[in-house]
Image (cartoon, rainbow, N blue to C red; front, side):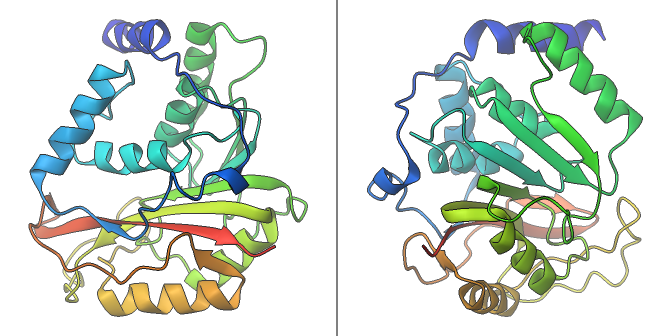
Length: 262
C-alpha cells in the first residue's frame, strides 16, 4: 500500500493537465489518427516519455501506455465536464487515468467489478481530495447497461472486445448511449492473420481471442450500420512488430475512433 500511495501522490502532484474546454465538433483537425496499430516498441517508449514529460501516470504494463496515449490524443480539447462511460471497467485503470486528466463525470460498467476495484476507487478519491467520488462503478452488462439513451459524450472500451463480447450487441448499445456527435474509443488485441487461441484457458472467466483483420472489417461494417463512423476514413494498416506477448501468443494492439452520426 505504501508503494501505491507514492504512485497516487505522484499522480496528484503532477497530473494537472492544461486543456481548452471545447466540444467535440471542433476537434476534427486534432484527432485524425484512427485507425492506429501498435507497430514497434519505439511507439511504446514514445508514449511512456510523453507521460513522463507531461506529469501523467503510466500504466504498470508498458505496452498499455500506447492505448492510454491514444486515448489522451482522442480526448484533447474535450470539456472535462463531459459525460464519459468506460465499458468494461474492471481494474479501473482507464477511469483513474481519465480522472487524472481532469474528467469529472465518469462512470464505469463491468460484470466483474470487484471489491478491490471499489477499495481502489476510495483510495483514489482520498488521494485526490475530491468533494465526491471521482467516478462511479456499476456491476452490469456493457451490452445492456440500462442507462438512458443519448446520455454520454464519450464511451471508452480498452482491451475488452477480445474477451467474448458480441460486437453487434456492443455497438448497438454504445450507439444508443452516445449523444449525437458523441465519440467511441476502442482498443483490442490484434494481429492481421488469425491466431489460434483454442489452447489458452479462459481469462478473467471469459474466452479470449486475438482479433484479426477480418474481425476488424466486420466491426467497421456493423459500426457503420449503427451510425458509428470512423473519425477519419482510413484503411487498416499492416502489422509490423508483434510487440505484445501473452499466454504464449505474440500480437499487437489496434485502436479505433468513431463518431456517432448527428
